[in-house]
Image (cartoon, rainbow, N blue to C red):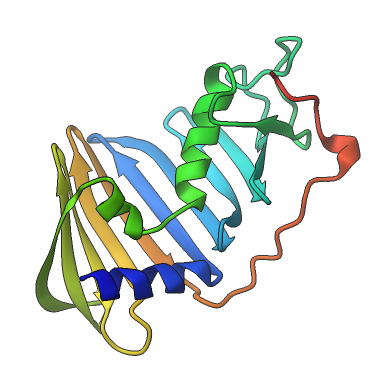
Length: 196
């Protein structure tokens, strides 16, 4: 298993696109991200119709709303306008910190984390996803259970993860391996002062 996980992590370091859909009977959130290594950009959509674009580059993250959102405010408490970028960190106050945590999880996908966080990882059966032969890998910890479907031909890239954590279920899909994401820092003139 360790060898498979190491090869999957190597594949994830290459540029790719992934989508995460989370629900609890209705949509809770969707994330679509393009990434290469730990740098990524994407779109996070919430359950109330709001959406935020994010860019993570060199360990820094910026968020801008698709539309004016009262949830995301600048240092003055004013809503951040679309096209203006708020630098955020996981410990940023309020909703900005929540967004930073979600985008951080989306951008730093590594299956080796399963072992570090003491998940029980077991090799499952071979099956097919979208016509490709895959190996099902099960990961469990407490109430979190997921099945990761890893391609068994060519590079062992993950194609899909299906799981649940309490009342939330999630599906993650990967595609477009090797696609260059073209990630750039927002224009300095459009970056707001940090919250902290």
